[in-house]
Image (cartoon, rainbow, N blue to C red; front, side):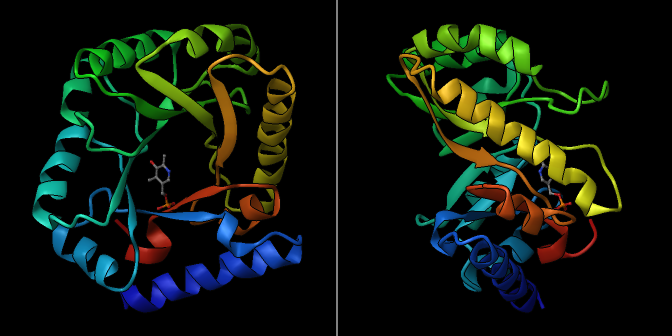
Length: 227
Ligand SMILES: *Cc1c(COP(=O)(O)O)cnc(C)c1O
């Protein structure tokens, strides 16, 4: 069943990409395995998924050890508390959810002390919804040069989570806003900053995110079922 679900999500990504003239290969599917057992995660891996997203540091670390496969790219997608940074310890190829300069400074300092560099995305709250983590677009613009100075991290793009809405079309404006913000920031050519990646779209709205330029979609429920 997980294999069928995965195939269906990959199919829908392809359809959405072709609809707007994008190559399906330009979009990576992050299978969100948070709160999902290691057994089910392994099932998805055996069905062909090679990239997984986790949102809790300790839970992720045990699962990475249990799944124990070399050819998996693990991504961290949740709010990261500063005292949990040490758990990440180069296990994650990408952190999607850096939501403040102070967190980035802490990650950078830790990675430098380990002679590592961590690839990250910056989380932006484009909707202005109060309960959401993420920088405002103007904070992002102001602080980007400072992120670019941090040697222990490498900024590769932006991430957003739109407000929950049963009508996926309502997410579109936020995806468009994130891409426009990216384009605006990219045009400034800030040292140390790359913004090629756009992480947006979840079970409810990933085809729309693909239409609007997502390079990473984070899909859990459509693959693993209700958590
Ligand atoms: C849980 C989660 C997802 C996946 O959500 P689904 O609706 O199950 O696809 C994606 N991104 C983040 C940041 C999440 O926390």
